[in-house]
Length: 289
Image (cartoon, rainbow, N blue to C red; front, side, top):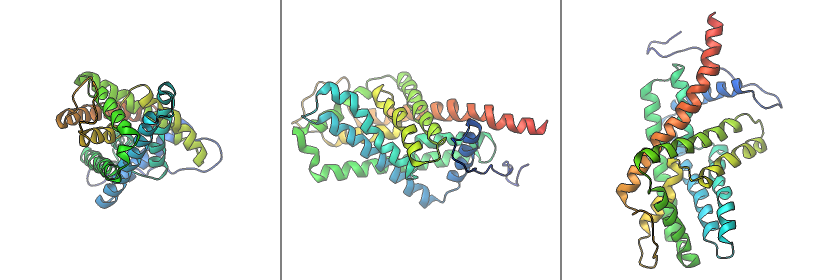
């Protein structure tokens, strides 16, 4: 059944209640419903929540840099535990209802089902990506002008530049594939979190999949922004590092573009569309039978 605009107007599934974890088919229904809801937000709401999302993710990335740069933490231990602190920002963003480009890629399920148009999903992803970018820039500016950027003898800047240069050292194909891996982990964690009914369930489900992204050198666009921008605005002679690649505006722009493409494939196609065919499309086909 379709409306006048040609979109599928079939009633959306409603969320049930109970104490057990949701089944995969129920999670798919939630993803469909939420995907439609997010793309229907007014512009001010999408922008505001996108700014919050970029800010929260940046706080997690900053926490990771603090751990890596802290002089009292052994470098091997720091490398092991820093990704765990990175997960904090993503967990806050999800539980607080912020908008993040990478998780909004799951809205591909709502598009595949016919509830939203290609224009609606493209507009939503674009607005959220830009808002995430601005949110990350805001946190970088606050951190820089706070003076905290200079603690630990600029070790935080060293860490940001080292991580950024490593991320920028891959060619476009490699960067895209790394982006695919990144959002496979992020959206898998989100899928697991949506199976839970309590705050504790969601926290535990998100924790390790999100931490795995920096731990395995995967990338997602919103998560890259804080480190890139901090590295760009702290060009100082006090920092003398041998980096694997040059950190420039154009290099950062290229990375974010190709990582975003990979994120769309990883979260939008390999998670959302596959589960759409397995659960949503199959259910409708059975009903038509």
